[in-house]
Length: 466
Image 1 (cartoon, rainbow, N blue to C red):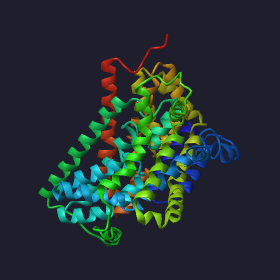
Image 2: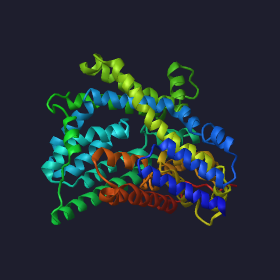
Image 3: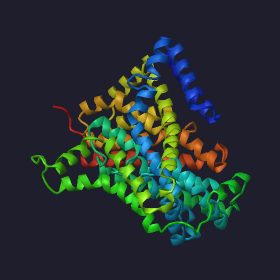
Image 4: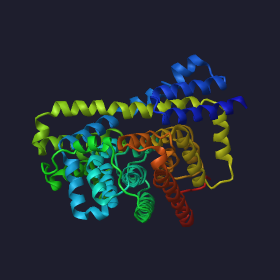
């Protein structure tokens, strides 16, 4: 009883400390100690093994995925410094116009994140440009936050196949699948997330206009707007798309070549490269991101003059997202050592639920506990995924459904991405969380359940064990 109360107390304290802006490493370590003490875990093992270096330790995760975070941050910095990301944003804005401000925000964020630019870079790049749009359209900031989150934090993060997102890579590296696993069901879920998300924010805008609610500027908006700089001094949008095409092309081309013929009997260098691309779900997308960064250097003169500085800043920018994600995984690593977690795992695995619904429930709950979709997905893959494979769930379907499920309840108030977005935009949970909840929690949950219903109706995805 005390142990379960300790788990709840640790989670509640983590949510409280995260919302108060306390450093996530300090918060996760304090909460891990609360869980350890109340569950009778040895403090030395908690601090020196379970939290930092166990199979679900903070630095075990950081070490495994450091390369991907590093290369992703360098690519994001290259796209931002060369103003390629800004050029793409402006081109879409001018094409769709101010009356489609919400659609502009969603499309730009979706395009950039799918192309390999990390979420925080996208949000930070888009907001200074968005201030002008919101002012002209008299759009409430809470709806801009929601629309950009639809594009940057839902379907491109978990559902779309081929993206070098950390969620896609975690699933692929854990299950031995590739980045395109379960692609068709991912596309189905993405259509629901994008369609319902945009319907919700557009409806919210109509209601806001009817109620006389509009854009309210503050001092932070004026400071952020200055970061946009000269909007006329940007490279061609067509040229700006090339680095993202290089990233996605590098990821997609091997799969396309393999689909056109049988390379298993060939001992050529190309065949070896194709095998390598499929067997390395961390290294291959990391290489693609570096190729995209080097493409920025070749195409944009501003990059060539400060390549070392930009790559160095990108490397520094990778540390905080990596460490923050690792911190919540370290907390989760302690939680998984408790009797309460074992009881939950046994209960959910033995519950009278269809296997795919069980996957949804377990991945969602774990992500909610740590307030991180990538953290929750990593814990799920390490602790529960093997049992679901034994139930007969196909690895490709498990890859995609678990990834989509992790991107629902992760966005509770203590989610780091939600807190960072509100900080950048000068919003509070009271002002904006309702809309954020609808587009990043409720709608992704609907999309995941609809995808599971479709799989069950078609009778695919699960092969009962013999």
